[in-house]
Length: 149
Image (tube, one colour):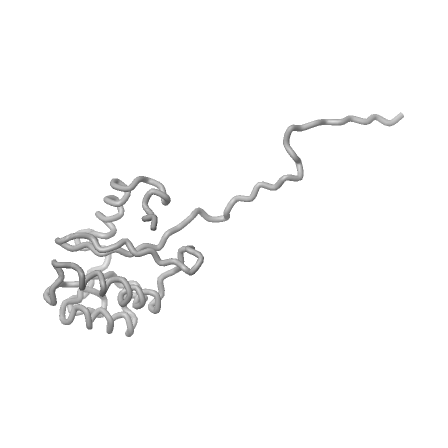
């Protein structure tokens, strides 16, 4: 004699739940000066997805975003110093050349006029101030921080 059992469920057993392998990420750049904050600038592809910063993307941001912002900023002068860390995209030949054009003799960076002291919390305001400030003002979630057009 054969036994037959049937079980009913309110959920479809063939339904697949997909979830992303990685959480959403952003690649963001901003500048801090005594007269204010420039940015943020989000490094994204044409589909709005975060991309890794390379020398080409960094110099494109400097030319298309930072230079125009500086030109419309009242506090910027040729006496303004520029500080960046020693990331490869920041210190490539082409990146250094663009920054030196904007800030002649006023570059704090690896390969700059004043060498960047690595891992120095007293000279990294973006790492130790800006991120916390953005989160305090905007919220704790990615959707809260991203500016809507």
